[in-house]
Image (cartoon, rainbow, N blue to C red):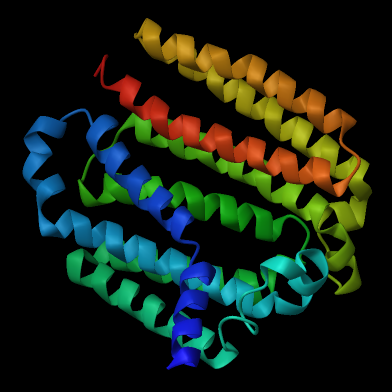
Amino acid sequence: MRRLLQDFIGFLKASRIPNLLTIGSTQYLAAIFLISEYPKKYDDLTSIWFFLMVASTVMIAAGGYIINDYYDQKVDLVNRPHKVVVGTKLRRRKALLSHFLLTVGGISLGFLLDIKIGVVHLFSSFFLWYYSNYLRRITLIGNIIISFLTGITLLLVAIFLERSEVLIYAYSLFAMAIVLIREVIKDMEDVKGDERFGIESIPVIFGIRGAKWFIYLVSIGSAGLLIYYLIKIDSWVVRFYFTGLLPVFAYFIYRLILADRQIHYKSLVRFTNVIIISGLISMILTKSWI
């Protein structure tokens, strides 16, 4: 009984419950504040079907987190030994079983809701597994896959509600850019273990300086996206918010230039997480001009 309880606690930790709550909240906020005809779609958002769509997305994500921990156990023992869950708090066989049940359940639920949702879930779950098993080791490809799948989380809302919304696309692209930056910084933080186990991340192949230059380029592109967004919208409230993000980006670059230790990179990862959370909060402001 004690071992089962430990496995359950390990399962919750490996599933990244805070991240799953963020994913679910993102989809609900996007549906409520980024869909222009929300009042006409009210029944869709309060029905069990929309909840199941969100649940299926969360299941796919949870399965992806668990399988990633399964394959990265040895690397994580070097990079972050105090955070290793699979193999310590959750038995490896239980981790594989959890991944299988969550993934199959999420895909099946997706097809039950809409064939398009099911296809997206099938695509996402395959690449989450392939990323953990192989793509994680290829320069830049793994980072792009994770950032792309993050953007799909928002696009699923548009697919389910059958709406083509500029705001959804804008937020998806912005989320992809921020997550791509975060993933490269995490690679900088984990460069020691990645190099030891043959993972060809950007910092391993091009060094820390090369990784920083890549982030500079992505940050410039993200700033350009922000400026484009400011031009397109009509609400001064939203413009004020996104204008405020420009100096935040500048401060982020300043801290990145000075960063040269693992603790600095860890702090920058937290910084990007704050930007992501603030982006979710900003969705509420968009309703004022829709």
